[in-house]
Amino acid sequence: MEQSEINAIVEKQRGFFKSGATLDLKFRLKHLKKLYVAIKENLGTIHEGLKKDLGKSESESYMCETGLVLSELSHMIKHIKKYSKPKRVKTPLAQYSSKSYRLPCPYGTVLIMNPWNYPFLLSIDPLLEAVAAGNTVVLKLSAYSPNTNEAIKKVLDGVFAPEYVSVFFGGAQINTALMNIKFDYVFFTGSKRVGQLVYESAAKNLTSVTLELGGKSPCIVDETANIPLAAKRIVWGKFLNLGQTCVAPDYILCSEKIHDRLLAEIKKQIVKQFGENPLENETYGKIINRKHYDRLLNLIDENKIVHGGKCNAEGLKIEPTVLDNITYADAVMQEEIFGPLLPVMTYKTENEVLEQVSSHDAPLALYVFSTNKKRIKLFTKTLGFGGGCVNDVVIHLATSDMPFGGFKESGIGAYHGKAGFDTFSHYKSIVDKKNWIDLPMRYRPYKKFYQKLVKFFLH
Image (cartoon, rainbow, N blue to C red; front, top):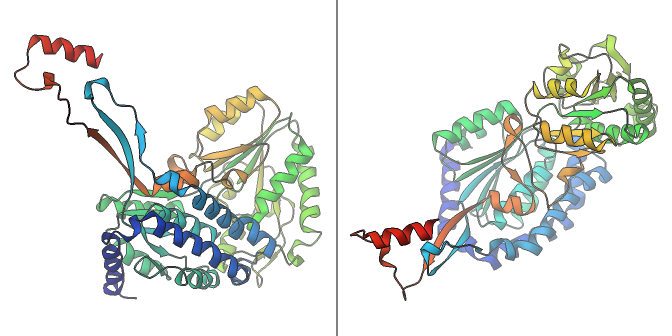
């Protein structure tokens, strides 16, 4: 698609937004309800696309993608009226008589750029929040998930006119063409490298952004943890979607006192959850493409494999693989893994944990397995991270009542539920002053008596 064609579509969206149609709450609510119905009617097509692109089973697709989207839609349909109302705030006595409020208003035409690892969830979640806030949307889908993209386009084309929501496919060329356009807001989910490019491009137009990135999310396990349960939950969260999850535990940092026990339980759980031959398990999934498959193989030090390690190049599959005796010098610790490789490191003291984690980029997530309340408080308050869990992994993103987002290098801004509505809204601060009284103290000439009154009101 040529730049001129893209420009024309965006201009139509600007015109539609200026018409005021999306400011109508009933109009937005109608389309959110239609979207809910369309997703329910096309679950089979969506799940089939996810199966072809990522090898996801129907159960995992619903649990981690379509089900979460339907839950978010239900939340927004239920609460959109409340979220859209002006928010009354306290007015200082010096501004008597008036009322003050914050009025949520849409940005206008927004660009949403999605990743390939959860192509349905991470497209529709921000889109429905942008629509709920009253924006028009240009949705750019990842070129790596073509089958899911077709399902998404089918759903959205059946709900929205192109001047309201437009869907774009393609790679770097389309990305560049879109970033040449001045949007009113940009929402990006993906790698830190691409996120930096998006941020630089948006900065040229002083466009506000949300960046949902990633990082090496640590999983800290101390000697007081319930080791069998910790291993069970870590294995589930780490190898969900073959580790291609932005909030997956990237590596384990465990007390050396329980290292052997934890490792034994992790091995046991891998067999229990994926079988003796995970590569033959039809529900295990696959790596998105050959490029990422080869990248992951280059991160494996065969001398440090303590479980797994087998792979299938034709099927783009790598077994759940545990690597032990890992240090920060190993290749697997030089980048976010984003695959089914689990490095294990140990620590001796709490200060060692604080020093090691804080000396690296702030991660998107942090997980602590412990029953020591003092230690839990120390790690969660002292260390910088986007969000996380205590005695579990991943599940903190599956609620509409809590913002999800990064911190420092792992992202800017947050969304889900009210936070998502707020992300795609600008809040205008407004004072509504009454005419029946007009205090003279603010007008020239400034008299001493009035100065005393000013000091009284402002102190």
